[in-house]
Length: 380
Image (cartoon, rainbow, N blue to C red):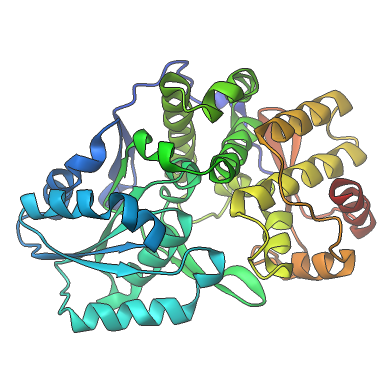
């Protein structure tokens, strides 16, 4: 079976309005608000979304983000009449575990959080995934709001309702679908990011261009220097366009039964790289960057992708910045981890492969020798 992401069918807007993006999922619909300065309006927006019955919210964050933005967010929440509590996780994928989730459950119980209360995720993808997973299961589900502060979280993980935690044998093997009530994106928070976090986010943005929108890919290739220098116009376009693509795909396939699988471009191999290094070497977007390069080489070897387009994908990923090397990892370990991918069906691993920039297909008939060969070249 192959499922295509066709840029010709994608609604296109060369200059997206950086205001409201609606994710239309019937009773689970919500807005993604994108504008500079929104962090200070979080309380007002959260009150509108959660309603007057909500008394308490728990802000889930990590020490790094909390030190920069925690007080501002707390002030905004207090102004809106919330009783705000703070829970801090460790910083990094290795803390996205059931152990951390259990600590958060205990905290929620101790603070007397009730069903009409809520959770607010302030931080990157790890914080959002843990907060969303706990929100989906605590008291059989409470509401939560995403306030992403990394580029990767703003354009990808905060939208779509995927939540979860890692297992030593694989990434995100334990999780649920639980849509946020609201996503609040303040591009100004990106200015506090180290270059490495921006690089990771840019790799995820490149993914959207390859799978769905050639014009976005070309815009990133042209303006990636401006994006790395935090140019407001370039970043606003990148965030808004990426969010619109993600929203469109999620609306068509909320639970990854078909089209949504194209969002996994680069992730099958990327997740394997994260798992074999125990989530300590790569940021998620960096691993996906390596995974996209490998998937493009698989497509080239199977005569699906023109070598010039494969080279163009390589170049824009390279221009995002230098990534941690993977040339000392054992191929057998990576192949074993790929085989444990949670999206495998009948023991066969599906790969999202580009046939041209802007369009991909899903293939589960990729010979293992082709995967090994592409991996070997990519990681060297």
